Image (cartoon, rainbow, N blue to C red; front, top):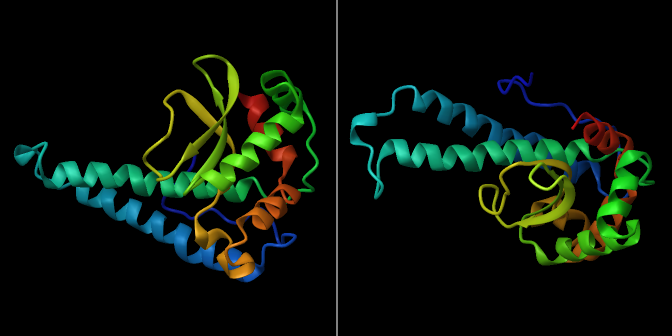
Amino acid sequence: MKDYNQSKKLPFQKLNGISEKTIAIHHNKLYQGYLKKWQEIQEKLKTADKSSANATFSELRELKLEETFAANGVLLHEAYFDSLGGEGDPKGKIKEALIKDFGSFENWQEEFKALGMAARGWVILAFDFNDGKLHNYLTDLHNQGGVWGTSPLLVLDVYEHAYFIDYGSDRKSYIEDFFKNINWSVIDKKFQKL
């Protein structure tokens, strides 16, 4: 079970194309900042005034809304970092499932990359327990656009903080390098646990 009082360590030492500086800022400041805010919200919820709960505004309402933003900021970043550090060569049951659900690996990859250009925040390959298939989902904010009953397998962060230091506004090159760094062994293990 995950202990959300501890930040998760990076599962890799170095990436191809994505600099250590970018990863250090991304992991050590941004991700850990979300983790600290999530912890802070959890503490404030313990004493939040439930008697004044109101749909227009109340301390409880605001804390619960921001809880989802901070929690998903943590979880999506952890899934993003977990996705990296590999050789970018798909293998295993996950590749078979991508071919089955998208017609070919190339079809899946084309859609995923296109969503990376279209999204403002995240692209997520997820297994949907509702229909038993893999889907690519786009979400612009941590707490908007997620689909209930899914489990993220591969997560691409396309917020500018993930690539701007290394690539400027060239998001397409960042996405290409992301694909070169995917750890398909980790993705396949997650998939086989479902």
